[in-house]
Length: 109
Image 1 (cartoon, rainbow, N blue to C red):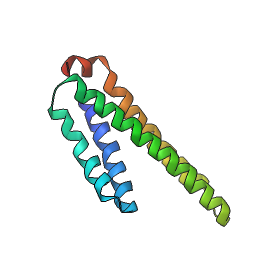
Image 2: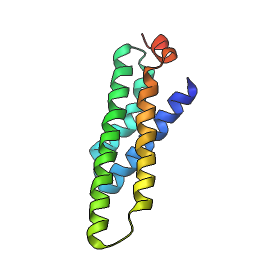
Image 3: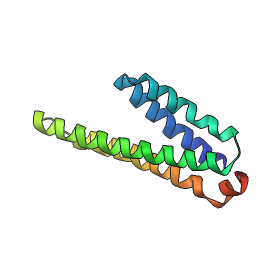
Image 4: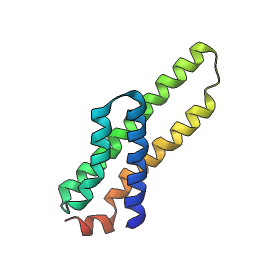
């Protein structure tokens, strides 16, 4: 269970860094506050954590599409950036998916 929580916090930190770079300080604060839901041990907090991870994954997908499109228009290489951001997207999605595991549901009832 500790691995699942650490993975989620890592995904949240990456998302917060993305919002910091974009200058979205409200979303940065929300991203940094999201792991505090682990302290509230109810089923709803687990569902909110999972939805936050899926929303962040969708945000990463949109970022990938926009970045690839921009780099293609400028004639710059885009594959490395797409692979890195794709990996971050997958990590964030898996972190949300692991929130629905049996051990997490047993602890957050």
